[in-house]
Image (cartoon, rainbow, N blue to C red; front, side, top):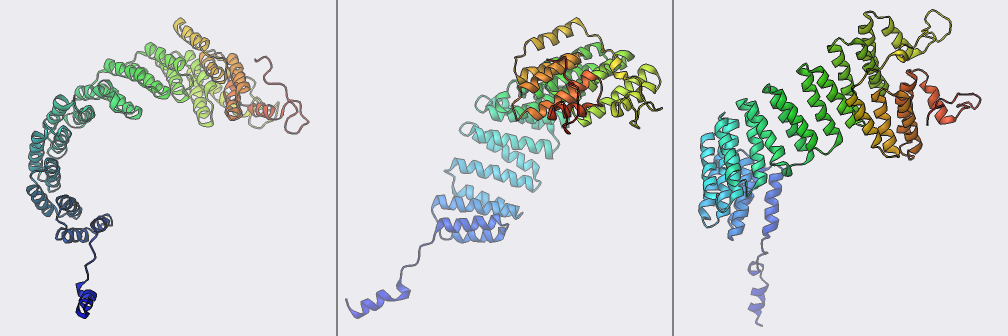
Length: 490
């Protein structure tokens, strides 16, 4: 090799340039966008477009540029770039559709609402045959602009309905979301509550498979709510029953059974409401929030009919079944109110509260003093007489339970709400015996705070029962002689 050949080949000016890395440069542009350095991202894209000329590269880079322009509120620039991109790639139908949809979005950002609706409409018409999903998206966006921005809900609803009727068979999820939009538009804009209720109901009837349980729960609730706003209580009750039948979770089913009974209460159908509240309890005895609410409302039905003794008996059940500090305090107040209403004075009401807190020796804790309370008034309260149908429901529910922890516990709650405290205490004790170690603390709480409180008609003295459970008859000190509180129970 000649001298000049060696020199020329070794010259830095003639060395091959290092190839540019497309992916690396694209990541840099995207990174600038993510860090909100939008103008730097746009500049990086423009630099790349001068070098990378493959069609797929131009499309990818230009789209990053468009999004950065939008994020930087350079809407006019974004629209211009979208138009140029679509014009340069007329053979790419998917790109044409995507660019048109994004153009409609930008027009909406510019508050050019009529123009946005027109753009979306063109997309829907052009894409209907070969891109039905995009056509549905275009109709959805146009409907949203009409409803939210132009306050033309009826026109928006017409577009949502078009998705259901023309594209529903191909795109059931899109149809479901269209029905959801129709329901919302009627509820919040047209204020046509019957139509809103019908649309929400279609979501749980026709489109239930498109949603999870939690979402369906909301639709069922909206259906009931809209019927009530439309002053259609019978339809609201039917919707609540449909929800109870359609949902899987016992807690949610109980809540809708309760709502149906509540509607009867507002209609002043007190006997029918009471029967429904009792059905809630006998059907879902372990759903304590719903059961306690139902029992409190049973008290309310009796009060509404001026049946003061029955109201007091129902209040005793409420107090019997309360199992934590807050619910016990609340139930005590309801019971005190029931004593007051039955007597038209505060004597038994105050003595009830004092006895439950301090016991027969009164606030000073000393026997044979003026504040002693001679009588446990709660123990003398009679439970209300139930209908034969209610008794039959409770007995059938009890007979259906297995002989295990869950079965004993369920029977215990059924008995306590049925007004049979001794039987309830016995079943709570069997549940305690059958409990595995993880359940023992909860089983002990229910045995004492519910079962034994109901059996003894007293909150006072329960600490001694807890001591007996933990330490036996000799107590914590090992020197006491605590009587067996469970004598006579299973």
